[in-house]
Image 1 (cartoon, rainbow, N blue to C red):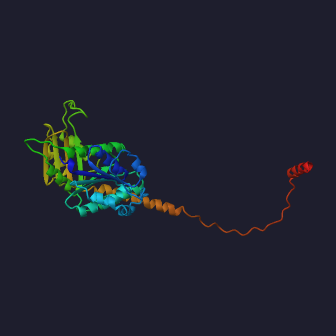
Image 2 (cartoon, helix red, strand yellow):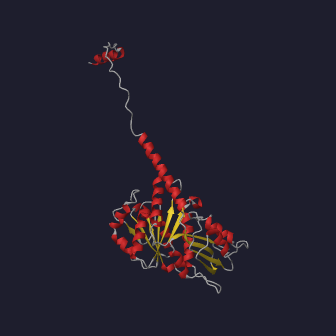
Image 3 (cartoon, helix red, strand yellow):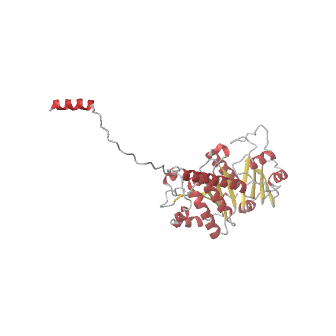
Length: 358
C-alpha cells in the first residue's frame, strides 16, 4: 500500500475538513487557515498551521500571496514534508484555500521535483455567489497551467444533493481505499509503482468504488455482484466529480476486482477512452475503477466562468443605472403674496387659560 507515502495539506475551512477526515484515518496532515472562527469548528484537530495576521482574506484571494509571504515558517514546513505524495486540498470558491493552493503547488513543484504533487479542489454549485464561482474558475485555470503537477481531482459540490459531509466522506473513503489497497493474486496485481504512476499523470483523476457486500458487513448483497456497467455508471455519471470529458483522453486506467469478481476492461475503455496502459488487481476488499491523465473538464469550468462573468456584468450595469438621481426641471420662483393668517381660536383659548394661572 502507498498510504504511508501520502501527506495531505488541507487549506482553508473546506480543505481543513477533508484534511481532518484523513487525519482521523492516521494520515500525515497539515491544516492551514488564518481564520480563528474556522479553526474553532475543528477543536480536536492536530497540526493546525495558523496564517498569523490574516484572520480570513475577506473574499480577496490575491491576499494569499502576502499571507504566505509573512508566514514563511508555514512554507518551510510544507516544503520539508518527507512523504513522496503531497495532496493539496481546498475549496475552489473560498478565499484562503483557493488563493494559497496554487502558490503552494507552484512552490512544491519547483522545490521538490522528486515528489508527486496532486491537488483536489471542490468546485462550487451553479447557484453559489458570483465571487465564489470566479474564484473557482481562476483556481482551476492556475492549477491546470502548472505543467509539473500530477493528478488534479475536481469535486462537484452539486453531488449528493449538495450534502458536503457526504461528499467529503465519499471522497476520503474512496481515496483511502486506493491508498491502502494491498490486494494480491497469482493472476495480476495493481502494485504500488503503478499507483504512483497514475498519481503522477498530469490530468484529471476520477475514481469509483462499489462493494459486492452490504455496507459495513461481509453479508452478500442478495447474491448480486457489482457489474461492469455499475462501475461505468459510478465512474462517469453517479459520482462526486465534475463530468468526465468525451474527448477520449486518458493516460491510465486502474481496476481492482473484489474477491472473484471481474470488471471488463474493454467496456471501461469504451466508456472512457483507450489508455496507454491498464493496471489490474484482484482479491480486493472492494471493487475500484480509477482513471488518470484524463482531459480536464474544460467545458464545464468554462461555462461556469462565463456565466459568472455575465452575471457580474449585469450586476454592475444595474448598479450604474440606479446609483444617481436625474436633474429635475427648474421652475420659476413663486411670487409671494402676503396672506393674513386667520386667528387660531383654540390657541387663544389655551393662552387665556394660561393667564388665569398667573
